[in-house]
Image (cartoon, rainbow, N blue to C red):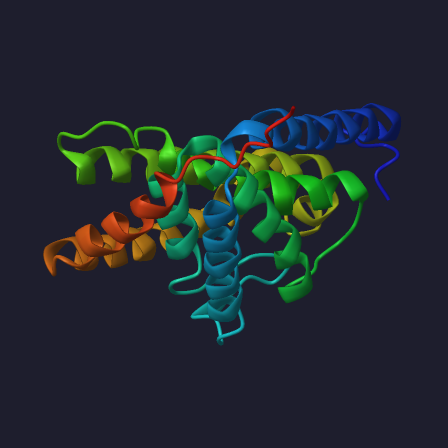
Length: 228
């Protein structure tokens, strides 16, 4: 389908996909060995399940190829990343990205799947970039959220340029990049809704209660095995 596309070279993108997956696996083993605790894993599973449940609700709007605007889906992921930190947030968000393939699969190539699902959602873990900053927490929380949304948007745009250029041509677009930039703007619409939800939680004082509760799990020290 894409043999004549300037951006497409199957061998190159498959190698890149393998490297990305290897980096995620390495991150889990190296960082998780000392940082993942029983409670952090448990809460990660719970919040992934919540995001997955919200994903099953009818979308506000569904895009023709891939992507949709839904409510509350990214909120549990943002909360986890902010309370448990960037690296654990990336892992949990990437896992949800894999599950999202079940919800609304649109597959044209293995690398496209990685870009649009685990890697795109992994960027949402950026919500935890500033989790250790105590002052103006809501400002830094939302800053991390915006950075995560930009990262997810970038992945979708890259996927669109590489794998959906023919669709752009059929629709009359001279540039696959312009088509992809416009099409994937749904990420920011969905993100604006999620930011609104965060602000509602903040002004109703529920955000502080939720993050305080989750941080108690984050304070648990990893289990260590004693050796004789």
